[in-house]
Every structure is written in C-alpha cells, then in structure tokens.
Amino acid sequence: MALDHPTQPGDIDHLIADDHAVVERQFQHLEAGRGRRVLVDQISHSTRASTGIGA
Image (cartoon, rainbow, N blue to C red; front, side, top):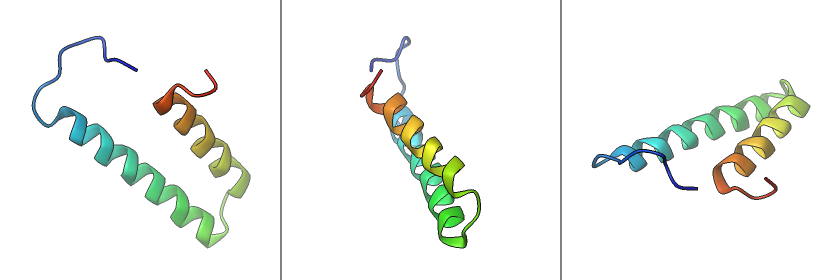
C-alpha cells in the first residue's frame, strides 16, 4: 500500500519498528493470558491493514 505523501529517510524504518513494538506487546499479553480473543483479532486486523490482504 503506497503512502499518500513523500517519505523522509527513516520514515519507513520507524513505521516498521512501531508495528513490531505493537505486535511484541500483543504477544506479551497473550503469553500472560490476558485478552486472548481481542488480541488475536487485533493481530489479524493489523496484518490485513498492513499488507492489504483480505481488504
């Protein structure tokens, strides 16, 4: 999915790092047994939004 504005050096790296941080937190919640169904839905939604799959 293309961005609707020009990017600056490091912009994409920051977006990827942010996504990784969110996924890491989600897996920590899963491992702790908190909010399993909600987190699975969030991961699924985030993956579809990031990749355009299933859109």
